[in-house]
Length: 435
Image 1 (spheres, rainbow, N blue to C red):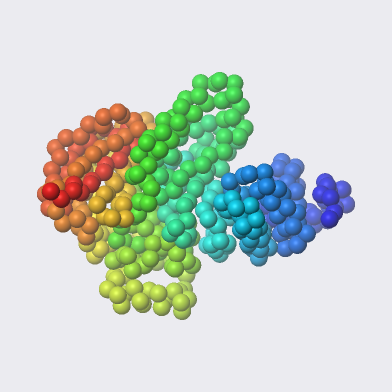
Image 2: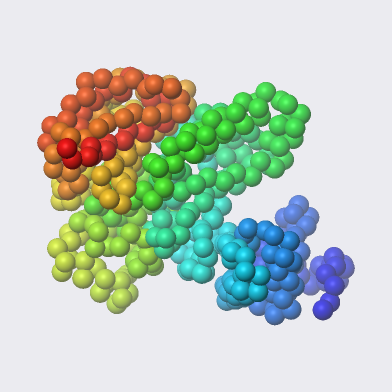
């Protein structure tokens, strides 16, 4: 096999006249100089063999997982590389008797290529382009929206790991998000069904090694929230969405999804190109279809016809049509949340598979101003008929004993007042054992 080497001047000239690399799908001269990535084509068997041999040596050395990063380029070649990697990992497990290593890849979010993830044991996506928060009056919920979209693209059994490569302060190599941003990023991901990963290369890592206060404070915040998640992992492990409303999205950007999130509408995203993935359609009562969807294929139309034939309701949202959230909630007859004052707080509701534990996640996106004296009204229609024998607990990584008052349980409605939501508070409702 030919040994990899840097391109000579003639080869570089040929490349920039139109030969495209895997990474970036074609780089301009400036980006080539900046990143100095190897140029290769995954359609070439020799290159795949070279990469696969490197992965095999890593397995021989005892790694637990193989992760392919930035799989951008020719879909069929990259899909073949993933398939070859899985086969190699399975063969190694048979030969050694050791557990099979996990295989996953950073394929990115576009629906037309996300199907390559189907053979991966986990989903890892590096698609965060801003930090959750309120920036100059703009309530940024883009990561929550993207996580919901990814959940709708993947198979239910696949765990999801989500990462930012750009923060609000800039590229991750150049800045250190504040402690509040670190905390909210972790809480947001876990509340919506993902785990977080972060790359602290560059500025953050350098400052941490040098003991700079900003880096140490951010690192402490990360540790604080990670410890909380581990200590209360039962709230996140095998937790399922409790929503009875589905919103169809053709692409990750969907203004209606942002609106639903900010109004604490309990919903999940169904990705138009992957209606067979994510939470099954028949678990929902209402399906909301935005006005700007592309024309449906015969298969997609058949799935929606089956949904309505089974008693499902489809609401078609007109452009800039007000009141869609209220209409969807009324038609769904499912759980609903009211927050007063709402401020920049939103909620997400999940439940354990046995239906005997519900978890309400409350996130305050205002980094500077805690939400205080928030009156919470949670209606659990379709989930619980009588809450009289249910126990309510309030937990937060921001306070050892979060204060709440005025707890009232009547029928399927739970009401109480939270004294303070700094960044993140979780409320669990659990059915007591029968006497």
